[in-house]
Image (cartoon, rainbow, N blue to C red; front, side, top):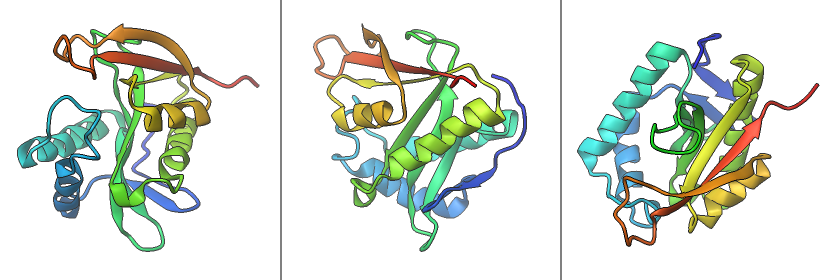
Length: 184
């Protein structure tokens, strides 16, 4: 992962993608406490895990100048989740690459926010950072995220059994999507 610049905040038509603030901790913890939001995750996020995620996001930003942006609705300032980048885990297809991901509060679903923010993130990846490819992965059951991956031009790359999810769990089968840099 290279550092080709800083991308502390980005405005889309309806969203502000920005660095995390202390005030984001409470709504992010509420988002992570919603079992419907986390239905495709094998483990819950308590307040400590939620706060640790924010801390990890900020540490990644400090090192690379980009990462997972907190998302807010531009017109209201309402915090709705995150979209952005993190490293693909070592034990998955695409290991060592950059993963684009998102997690939105239920109140923000079905409005196109994930697609809008992920599209803008890909613009940063290919145009600002000069990456040649971006990855994304999820449980094969997570049709909402798979639909976003397809809408942003990603294609299925591989299916695998996620090694950190218990054998027998319906969430263990995973799929990895990939998108290469658009041509000239």
